[in-house]
Length: 411
Image (cartoon, rainbow, N blue to C red; front, side, top):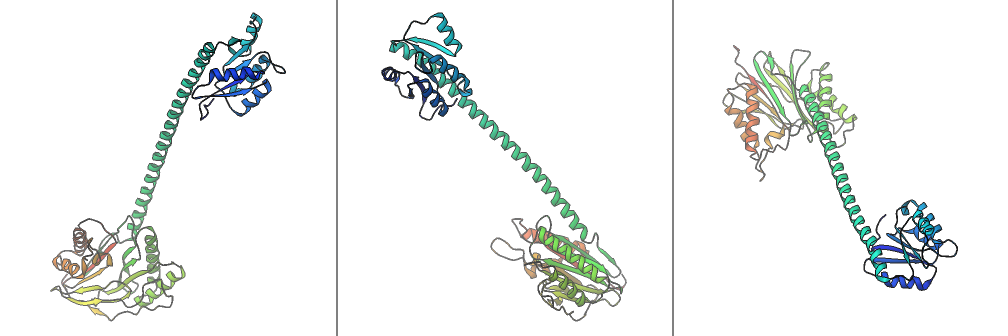
């Protein structure tokens, strides 16, 4: 049974209006709502609509008497334990008392009713009901709190499971992507070649590769898919697959770039595009030819650290126009001690909170300072210098670099 919002409800049942008025006058008090019924049938209709803390029920009534009404009240599950006090105008016989208690009575009052006695008896049941209701509400609050805590714990457990699953998926994605990069420096007589890619997130959109060509030359490729994260990482893997597939039957870097571009345009990559520089390195002649699809400028430095060649873009980024061309730049001769630096814009465009860039000048200075080291060490030190420059430690873009050192003829 639940307590109405306006307090405790008591049902008064008597076929005499005067008796009802008298009962209401005696029992009227704050927090108690009195509902009157002039017959057993009317009382039952009230019980269909609401619950009561106590029923005062006249025994002698036309139609349904008090005993019959009480028996029907007890058949209603929600009223099965509602206290009933019988009101009678006659001295009750033992048989009547037995019948009354059998019908569910908790007490008898003989008319005329003594007000103080009535208030006392009704007060006991009202107080009992209020205390019971208070306990019920406390239990409900405890149950609600426990349910909320249970749901919270379930949600936390599910969140932990989902977080662990996501971390595992990210770890696997990163592991798969790292396997797409060259596993070690490229062993090639007369050259020291090393590279590395450092994604801003678990996976990135940068790409580098060393690919032997069918005529004995070696292709060195470095690319940058717009954005970073899972989407660019997938496009990076797709670009790598196209480059390696077309390089199996072609040796012209301009033709290979055009074919990769057409394949990417057909895949309808929405707003995604890829910048890429593809270098064809001739070990015998120590020359290189490149094509650049909208990629950042790359550099050739001599033994004095001076920039002797700037490898600028020769075409649009890949994936924009299907009929775009990517002409190869003129051949560049390499001398012993030269250093070729291929990189993505995440290095030169690394910046502080105030917008100060790491820049091209500082990038080249790091290469000059480390030129006596191995190609792989130059790449690692360049990355460390950039991260040290970004004092807050936040890497906003993927960073990738490949260094080619031309060794002396005797080497």
